Length: 288
Image (cartoon, rainbow, N blue to C red; front, side, top):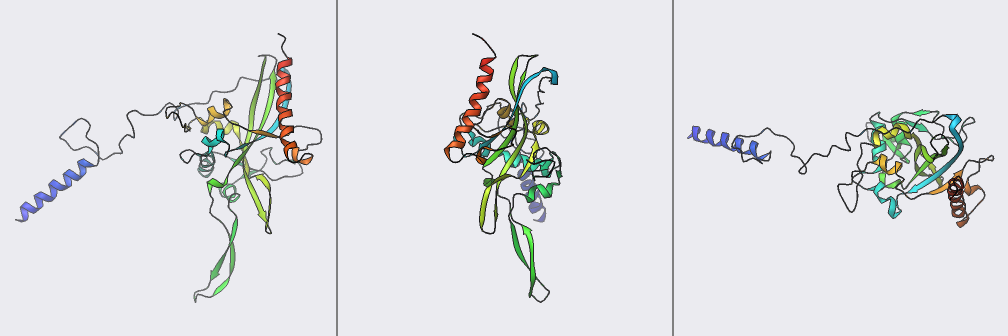
């Protein structure tokens, strides 16, 4: 009787082992336990992609250059792919920062860096993540259970709280190639700072050097509502300008932002004015 029971246990264990892996070829031999392929082909085109570098640019060939700062709102219908739970841009960036694959730079204003976007001060991963979470007071207790005081700890980060990204880019006309093109320099997630019960304007949490981030973004596929086989990576979204945005500042001698001298809808008018000026410059280069 004991031999029969032991034999049944061995058979049950064999059946359980073989059931953990799909038997697609109808083999009778048990297969090694491994994760099944989620689909019918391996998607490696994007995960194995490499960055296509910019064309070489010499200072003597730059006939015109204009720096602008623009913001991407992920609540915009065109930009909803940046906030997809399957591939959030902010999650991609923060995971890479924590893993040491990306460097975060402090966005604080200093004497030598008034705008805080010149990539001067490197932040440790914990410092960068601490920019997102509001501090909370946590009580401390002694061994008898009596409260002895409080300590400040960062709260939990909610990726859905990041609604905007700021981009710093240069529009450059290369007379050697006769090309007028934008080149993104940096990207920053925007956070809203609250203090003493008051909420202030959104500010960059930190800056990411975009040429460095491209090596990561080129391996991250994006989610498309119409087609799962898009073949597009996050690097493609930025390089092909697949986003809606509005300009918040252009380079100027006074270093003024639009909100420093315009309010309400006038800020949007200023954004459209700069966009039109860039298009007009390119248009006026050629004769028809």
